[in-house]
Structure formats: C-alpha cells, structure tokens
Image (cartoon, rainbow, N blue to C red):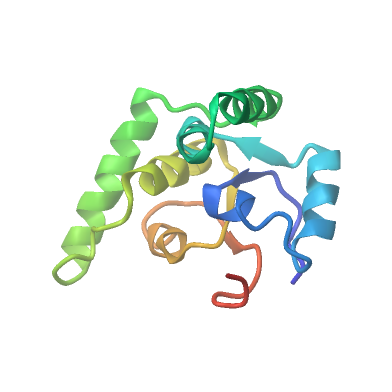
Length: 143
C-alpha cells in the first residue's frame, strides 16, 4: 500500500506497525523526508505503553524530535464539536471515538495534516472533520 505525500500525523496505531514488512520501507522514507508529525496525545500513549523508565525517556526524546501538531483550545473545541456532530448524525454510540483520536484528528484538521493510522475511528472522524484519513496497511492485514 502506498501513501500519498504528507505531512501525516502518525497515530499510535501507525507507530505500533511501523516495523511491519508492509509498512517499514515507506515509513522510513516518510521519517527521512520529515513527513511524519507528532502530537501530544500520541506521545503520551506511547509513554504509557513504555515498559520502564529508560523506554519512557527514549520515547519522549524521540517524539520531541518531530514536528508537532499542537493541541490548542481551538483543537479541543473542534474535537468536542466532532463528537457532538457524530452523535447528531448517527445512532446510539456513533459519537464513541476515543478521546485521544478525536484530539489527534482535530489537530490534524487544524494544521492541514493527514492522519496515518491503523484505526477505524479516524475514518469516522474524517466524516465530520477536514483531514485525510490514511491506513498504513489495509484493515485487518497486520496484527
């Protein structure tokens, strides 16, 4: 699967699959070209998943080296609006996207970045926010 030119906010779900043979070559190209963008919720999720103090530091330092999609008041307002809009448009539970995903999508929309992911919530959020939702690989193709 080939992705269009970025820049892309890389979601935690994409980072978790960056080493997969289907993803790794293009991922390396995007990193080298400066096309991957970090976002505080992703950094925080990756720190949460780190097994120990040394891993936490490696994650924090590595993520600080990427350009950032900042979380501002306008981003949090857009994320809240998106969840409310999903509730208005859909049936019961249509608004139930993960809060970090809503923030990441809203930041990407505000800064005119796409979101590189392996998570259906971004396709849902792209129906109400203006950003490109791009799977790193076809859904269900990577564990």
